[in-house]
Image 1 (spheres, one colour):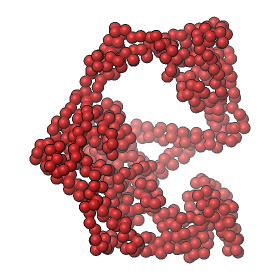
Image 2 (cartoon, helix red, strand yellow; image 1 turned 45 degrees about the vertical axis):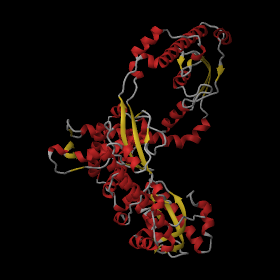
Image 3 (tube, rainbow, N blue to C red; image 1 turned 135 degrees about the vertical axis):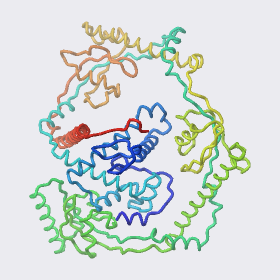
Image 4 (cartoon, one colour; image 1 turned 30 degrees about the vertical axis):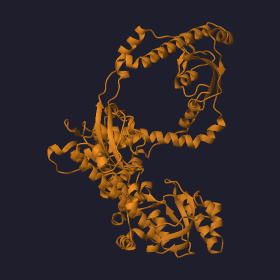
Length: 630
């Protein structure tokens, strides 16, 4: 199957992709290889982690961080993320897992691997696995099918290993009940907030401003900035230069007929009776016997679709009488495929067991393998060639511009000679590149990598090719106080307002603790108390929003201890609370939530077991790191 994917994979150009797969993150590049010492960054129980694998892992991790943070990513964040050590840690962990899997005798079959690859949405077109897209996505992510399949195999192995390690996790009834009692307890409170903004008379003196600036100079540091000139070559502007004739389209069709092949598919109905993976023998046999009885009724004339609507436990097809979309052999799990593809239209299978449970299958139609006719795909081919050739023409123009800019020493002058538009930006920091760019993060990274006057390599962006030249730089600096005085003044005023709010909140709390009536104390301090509705620990608080410190304090109060020790700082100022009520959880609710809580706690326990087991692997393993790798 995987060889078939590779043979039939194309090189389609796609603008964007979501490479979202639930697999182990780091590329596998570890094993029992022979390396020169300088080619090894670590050993794990005698097995080497090669520097090539480390570099691939680091680069992949860096790419994902860039995609996640975009233009917000800066050098300080990169230092905090510590990607070099994180990448090596991941590689070491994966090798520890591989060794453990071998000790347990775990394996992943080619069939399991193929099914998992086909289910990944990034490799699908119109809901089906597409070999061409498979290769494209991997190519755009600098990966070969062989490397990816190795990665995916190890991911599946890790899942099997996790089942072995965490399979013994159990959740007791007492644990469920304690969780429910803790999380479903509700309280309400009277509250008043002294808002900082009410102290509008607060001023900042020149001395306070100067002192605050000196104590917080780094807060006001200005980032490095650059000003660049750039030219963008949009392939769409070259489409009218592309001329195609019938013979070219036919030649493409003849050379790529495999791209237009439609495999044999089956249209079928099914009835599913679900079974848990750990179902006992009695439950398994009872479900099989029930399906066997349904099969007998169908063969005697009962309507398959009607029975599917009545008893099937597949929510995706039940309302359609069990009807499934046409599927290929590799689109469904193996036992289901083997049974369905062995039936003729109108035939009903014996009960079929899969990881989902027991199935009864009736084939409605078999669509034979065929190749789409040229007339069906002519426009599709024309559009593809038009797009590819327009992009090729745009790239040729970008190369000509690059050569001309090197000869002229100036991108703008070269662009004018070629009748292209050059745009000069204002100064911008790395975190805020000019608007209107398809990938502003890559544009900014390229700009900040240049020396003054240097012309970049051709950037291949989703909306075309870009060349840019660095015109001017401004280094990062701490400005003089006059440049940021307004900002510093505002910061000082906000700080003093918050201090005043906290001071008045303390006075209000002292009055209440001293026995003052709520309304009288509120009137004296110019605030109004409000009462929340009942809220649980995970809820936002009515009138206050998400204030974790206030929530924690509210749950610590009682009739005997109705006030917190101190006012609670909030985003707007300082808050004073008074206990107003406590509501015990509804016992009936426990029965409604019992299974969901059990599943949640079970997932948590499994995660804890897995982490503890991994820590033990790390402690017991002989791990040696090279100190000087980079």
